[in-house]
Image 1 (tube, helix red, strand yellow):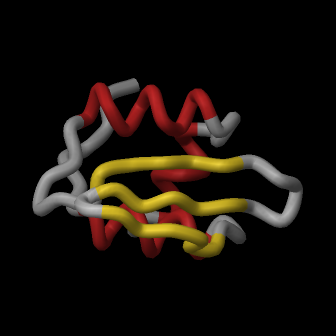
Image 2 (image 1 turned 180 degrees about the vertical axis):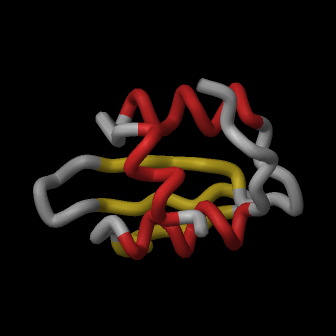
Image 3 (image 1 turned 90 degrees about the horizontal axis):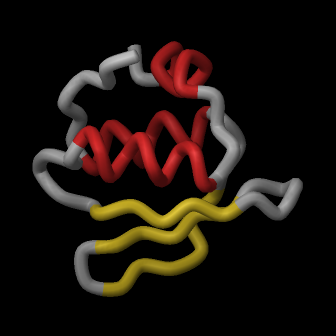
Length: 72
């Protein structure tokens, strides 16, 4: 499944809707944690690379379809 081109702000808001909260921000990277201890780190840029985002979602065990529902 091909991800749309999203901004760092859109990714941040979608993850917040999924229950993640921001725990750290350094430079252009944001680290978020879910109450079940899953962690995701992604670049907070004007455009987040699709390949990078897909890998971060996979590492954090986030279903891509569920994530995409939260971006709308």
